[in-house]
Image 1 (spheres, one colour):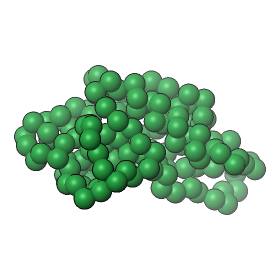
Image 2: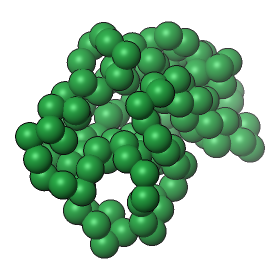
Image 3: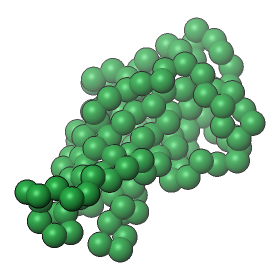
Image 4: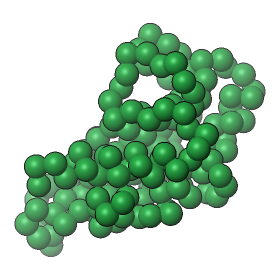
Length: 139
């Protein structure tokens, strides 16, 4: 299971890349951003010691921070809303549900919540953003 977490993260990034409006995706927090919207995916946690799960099986949690713009405008917040919708061309949920195996990198992966809608500071910049939480099962 040496690269299972990295593979799952790559699979999630591939699903997010199906949203053509997202201009840049990262699997690490970059020092600076030049293209928007930008998605930054990070591994957050892994459940261990579950009695019912077989050897090598894990439940992982990822968070994707979607950064829309450095301008705090109504237009930026309206655009962010389109990514939080349950359906539509910019819907993160619809993109991930299009392949819940994230390109066969997990057995099941899903969006489980959206939080921290507002402003985010990354790499010295302040952006209109939201956090999208995902969970996955890999055996």
